[in-house]
Image (cartoon, rainbow, N blue to C red; front, top):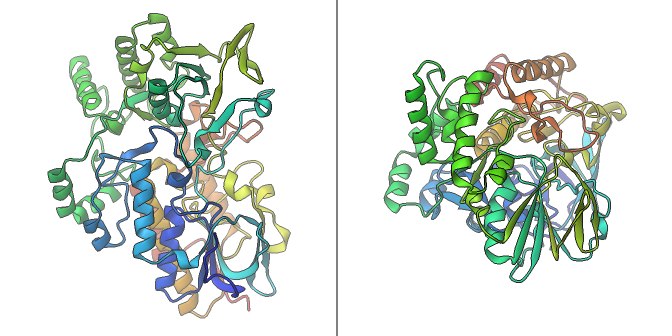
Length: 541
């Protein structure tokens, strides 16, 4: 349903695409500057990721006390997180609380998808068209479309003709789904599947997991948040937020490692890994400085996790199938789970390796692998997203001189600081490709980008200027820097969605900036201190 107040106005200072955590804060920030803003959101509510991903067991893989807004101190203090890792219902409730608290819905048009955005250089404005027939203009266009918001169906013959119930984890029915008495097949074993599989197994008569690639998963050690710990964290919020800025991933809890995996004895290293495993969460990746840069160091952590899998899964053949051997640990998104590997000890769970023998087709009531036919009632697709670039490329975006974003990004994304694109004046990306985004505490990176966008717009207003866009050479240098930094690590060794490897035909380019949050923020501050070096501000009027 559309916002009742968003009816007659046709020109805005800014149009924001998306009402997830990025779009909501951008709206709040720009409104606080006295600007007129309209937000378009394809769902019927706020929350972005946590609006769409309602599959069983869905929760954040960062602890709630850190995965939350910091821009308003009263908001931090008044909201009481109940879970150590925010569950989907709690995170959606939080998003709605923020929308209510700051009266955001009056400037959001729901159930509306932006289809076209064309820059008019003569009028110095963006012309935006929606699937609902809106035709509006704006001086500024902000893409708050998210990094994991374009669900992908697998390219398997017959998938569209499956006659039973079919679900994608990234577009789950809002009324929920029950599986008692059902034979369920799930394709994929990434982070969504790792959370969903134990929950579905508890209900289904039979669950068949079709594993394309074994992924590393660490116990989350999830549970209720201790009230005393919550209050202690609140009392130190400023200190904790500041500490997060000084870390590689923007997560204060784990800090920054200080020693190599080979600075300690084998026994000491084993003890450090055991302690991290017991702590759960992302702790293992924060144990040593070289886990993501040195293959031998990485292998010590990878083999430690494989040993835990072999200890947990009773059937040795199944355990070995679940042990990842084709990529260094951490180079794909590290999964966090609650009893994932234990689930394969259940009599009603069957693991099918479809890496060696691929799924040949999907029939109306079955998945066919080689000569084996697996009859199912329900098909769950945990097959991921067209990550980081998909949502923006789905919109027909045309910048100055007819430049099309989809064509500019055909060989891989090109941005300056992950924030803007050359030849697309006054168009901003929140946590776009070549920024830390998905390799950081996401809301921390969102707030950083929103604040930078607001500062650029304020500079334009203060100096009587009208447009800002990156200089082509600055963008080229940043793309080169992003690639250089990536290839100093082990990340490109994995066929991950960070590389676009999950999408057939998508260029294999490493998309996030992995130099770390601390270094990225320092680089951005240097740019700002040097009068926004690399950005061209002008009076196009």
